[in-house]
Image (tube, rainbow, N blue to C red; front, side, top):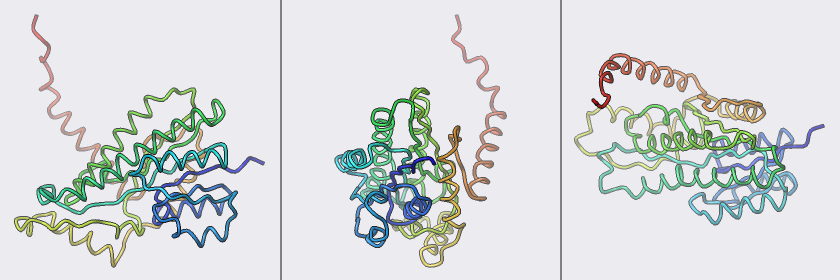
Length: 287
């Protein structure tokens, strides 16, 4: 019988993070559940022993707390198999409307990009230096379909996810194949999670009252009280299975809306590229 896998999960208080923590435990694996307020998981802690569930305080904006969490994981379990890099939140704002109101947006970048980056760095180092040689590990980067296509009123959230995707693609090409570290960028569409209500709202400029972005604002605002989307429990089951694949995909869009976004983005890129490919002819330096 194979030994249980050790999972390190960020943003474990709600949404995909909480669902993944519960699934990992249900399936007999070990969860290192990290979150800003550990008391949120007190009920889970009473149901599982310390050799199955380790709950740690972690604000991903704090590099010292990231280092401490990975150190505690090493001390207690001596290895780590999967990192579910999930902590994030959103800001609802047109790009122009945010002028002079950027504090929340900068904080979002600290969480969604820099926090995720620092967790990624710690994960790669752990997989390479703490795990036995060649054992490696799996890094699951939770992005979004918003990391593929720009969405009106979510431009800055788009930017954090675009940045995460670019960093993750480069990281996947930088690591030595012999380390056996696999990275998958998960790109969910709309799923019914508590994360839909964890959105900071920046008031729009009056000029945008009738703009297309105003329609999306209304839709996004309504999700807090009337959520819509697919089942997050079914999604985390797919994420869990991803971590078992010998050769997982680099990109993993999930949800019918996410699939449509990817197809639309590819078609648009190809159409623009093919239409203007001739403009790249004759650009060589004349000798």
